Structures are given as structure tokens and as C-alpha cells.
Image (cartoon, rainbow, N blue to C red; front, side, top):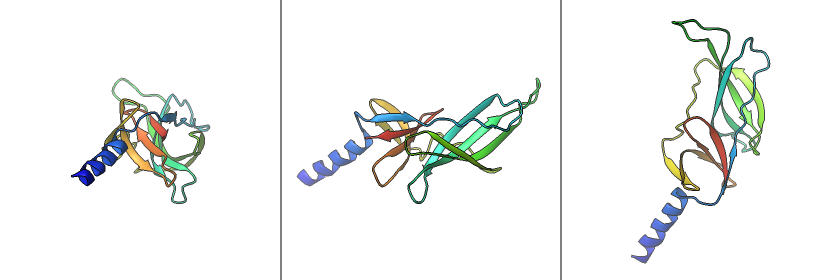
Length: 137
């Protein structure tokens, strides 16, 4: 019984993390888009070597009309481990923004976020419905 309670406490502690620091991942601006007027980015994990955060940025540009939205273009993106924007990579046609991560909801400092990934140092990526964050426990 004590072992079951201990294991439950560990699971609850990991799901209901408290008193950590959330760092907003900066959205890089695209330097070459004509009439760029909107962009959003979502993190999707850590690089294989753990040195960067990876994700996708989607930009709207040009002009739309009453019945047609502005065209959009997506790029692979990376961030430094301090949350600062690193670079936009290649254009991708089949990548999508995923603000809901794995779909698992975690509570951080009393607010719900979608869990994305954890690196070997214990830092976590989490997303709200509109923004990605690096969580430092």
C-alpha cells in the first residue's frame, strides 16, 4: 500500500509541476516575405542532440480579398535553449502548427498547458493554444 501511494505521489508531482519558470519562445520574423502581416510558431520537440528546440512557423503575407484568405507559407524553425529565436530553416509544405503537443495536459504554476517533450536536463516544452514555452522546473 505504501509503495502504491509513493508511486501515485511521483506521478502527481510530475503532472502537477509547481513553482517553475516559463520562458516564452520568441517568434522569428521572416526577413524576405513581401507584405508579411502575421506569423505564429509552435515548438514540436528538441533536436536529436538536445542542443536546440525545433518547431514550425507559419506566416501570412500578401493580400487577401473578401472571399479569399491571404496566402500562407510554413518554415521549419529552431530556438536556442534559452528560448531566443535561432533561425528559420527550409520551407515545408506538409508541416503544420501543433499547439496541442501530445494532447496531455499538465498544470504548471496553476495553469494548464499541453505537454510537448522533455530534454535530458529535465526542461520541458509546453504549449498553450497560441504560444510555445520552455519550462524550467
